[in-house]
Amino acid sequence: MAYVVVDGATGRVACASGGHPSPRLVLPGGETRALEAHGLVLGVDAGQEYAEVQAELPPGGALVLYTDGVVEARRDGELYGDDRLDRLLAEHAGLPARELAAAVASDAREFAGGARFPTISPSSSSGGPDGLTRMTTGYHRGAWSRVAPL
Image (cartoon, rainbow, N blue to C red):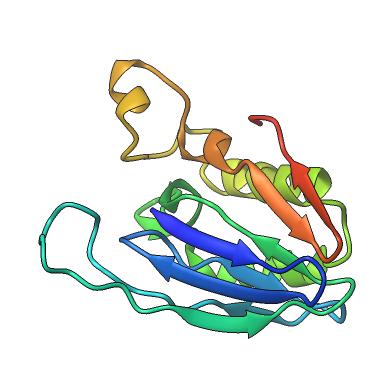
């Protein structure tokens, strides 16, 4: 689970994570940065504390949230991974959230040869959506976009 707060007026982003992949900031020039908020999965340790990290999302930048199904997509034992995700996000900086999400989903699926992806969500155990369909929210400074399941 990731907890993210964005101040739409200032672009200030605060994030804490309980076992969720690090959200990505995509800057207008194509640079990507991980919001390195780390913590145990919720419910594992009752005394767990979750540190907050902060960053600024500049005008024209984007905040990308995704599940582990994206970076854990596999081809012949090789993971899609954070580096490949960052390269793709950099190449597509400036796209609206829906188009950026579609580009990530398409690239990860192509990488894995069209295979479905792992996810730890309860719905997957009953034949529900794969990890890529969970990439549902994007923020471009000044406007949230709800991205429908892909």
